[in-house]
Length: 319
Image (tube, rainbow, N blue to C red):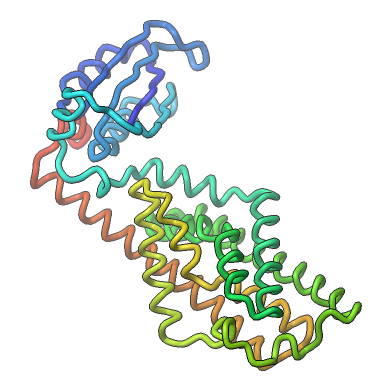
C-alpha cells in the first residue's frame, strides 16, 4: 500500500524515524514544506498490506488524522528486490490483511447514498420484474449484476461488527429506503403496463420454471445468502473487488424485490409473502454472515501478528 502523508513540521523527524526503522516500510520520501493545505511536510512511503493497520494506528496516535492528512492507495506492482524483502518482514499473507480504517471509510462512502444508488437499484428491480414476466433467467442474472445493494449490506455489517451505531443506522436506513423506492416505482410501472394490456395477474401466477425459485425460498436460500455474505465481505477487506461479481449473481435480493413489486401491483397475494421472505432471508443472511466474518478477521489479526512479532510502529502505539 502507498501512503501519502502531510505531517506537521514538529513531528516530521519522529514520524520519519519510525517509518525508516520499521522493516515493513520502504520507499520513504520526504518533501519539506511541500504541503499547503494543511501546511506541513509531505512524506510518502510504501507499506506491506499486513502492516498498514499498525502504521495507520501510529499515525493516528501522532495526530495526523486531525492535524495533517493521510491518503491510502493500492500499489499494483512492486517488482524490486527491496519491496520483496520488505514483504518478508511482515507476518501473514497480503490478501489476509484487513485495513480497518479503509474498510470503515469505504463503508461510510457506501452508506452516504446518492441518486445513482437509487437509480441503479430501481433499474435493477425493473429488469427483475421483466424477468419474472418473461420467465428469463438471463434477465435475472442481469438484474443481480446491476443491483448496487451489496455495498450497503457490507456497510451495515461493518457498523454492527465495530459497534458503530451511526454507520449502522445510516446503512439500514439507506437499504430500507432504497428498496421501498425501487419496489414502489416498479409497482407503478407494472400498473401502467397492466393498464395498456401488456401484463395481467397471470404474468405472475403462471408456471415459471426458470424464475419460480424467486418467490419460493427454502433452506438453500439461507445457505447461499450466508456464503455470499462471507465471500462479499472477504472480497472487500482483501481488496479483491473482482470477486464481488460472483456475489452479485448468487443472491436474489433484487429479483425478489422485482417479484414483490409485480405481485403487489397485480395483486397476487400468494406470491407477495414468498417474495418478501426471499428478500428478507437474503438481506439478513448476508448481514449476519458479514458481521461474523469481520469479527473472525478481527480476532485473527489481533493475535497472529503478536505470535510472529510486529514492527516498531505497532510496538510504539501499544506502548
